[in-house]
Image 1 (cartoon, one colour):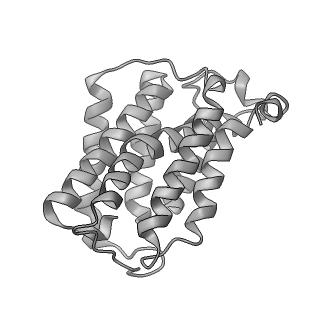
Image 2: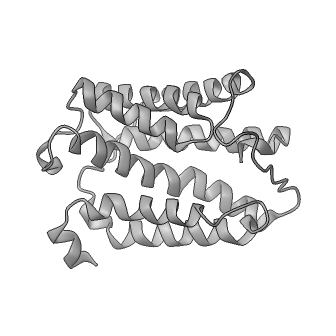
Length: 208
């Protein structure tokens, strides 16, 4: 698989996201207890297989990353009652008492998903839209089309499309401001961890 990645530089960025979205097609409220942990394990495994390819992930930290992450998820929650969601109301799975699922969900949402999504959206897609040979595009390079298209697609990816648009714009802004992919991972992880805390505190399972 790593040999294939050498010939296809996009593969390490796309494969984890593709696996996640493919498994999502069979996930529903009836099988989520075992499908979600399976999905997290598969994606985490792919990220590990390709981890040497993610040279853009240079560790850094700023309180701005955390602030953007908290702002994004606060808006996600506040906007929720005021717009229709993609696919209607959808199934709500009450995870009360299902502790293995809850632990895997928190770990997946806070650690695996932010890394997977940021590698795809701001490690690959936002640069590929600038130039097909995306590895030659420096992190933080701005063009209006790449900004707008990634925000739009990030919104469409989520059932909560309006909140997704807002979060996509905020993460893109941080990407340009900090010129750091790792900063976006920190912000995204902060958002998802804060949302997990909200869900568990309030029992607001519709966000899961």
